[in-house]
Image 1 (cartoon, one colour):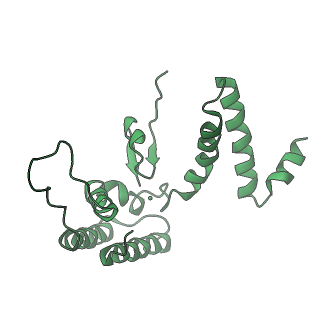
Image 2 (cartoon, rainbow, N blue to C red):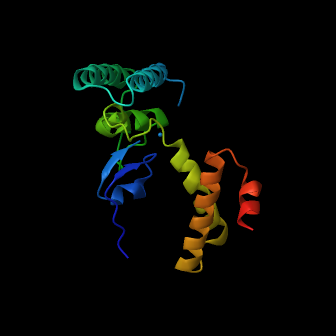
Image 3 (cartoon, rainbow, N blue to C red):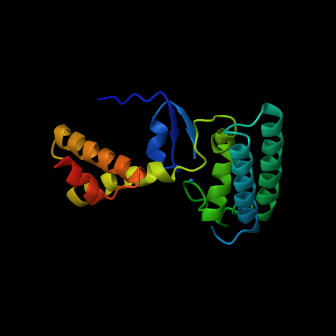
Length: 179
């Protein structure tokens, strides 16, 4: 079965998500640049909220330039590792978590900043991550779902509980209403 997804996928850079043909948006190490990036992104988010959900093109470009400037400074502060001396090893040279994050922020800048001009894009994917987490836990415990019907039922129940929680209801209250 081939999955078709034609919206914007908001994720935390887990590699399997890149199998989908769609637009994307994305979610250490005591690095000064990382804190500055966090502050910049939070500042952009606040400006987007104050603007009603989207920035005009000129303001978005101003923030993109600040983002690029910060990434250039970060690239100097957190350079890629030198290859090990001697015989070259196969594959990539191991990078720190900070360097991996920096390279993602550079390579996927359009995805990271998509929330600035697209009012349907949230700033974080925390809600989406929380929704999918229980499905992943279920798969980890059981290894898989026994049938598509079982997976559909699980997702339907989780969707109902999540919606009820968003409206301020506990899971036990939600299930009481069902029965």
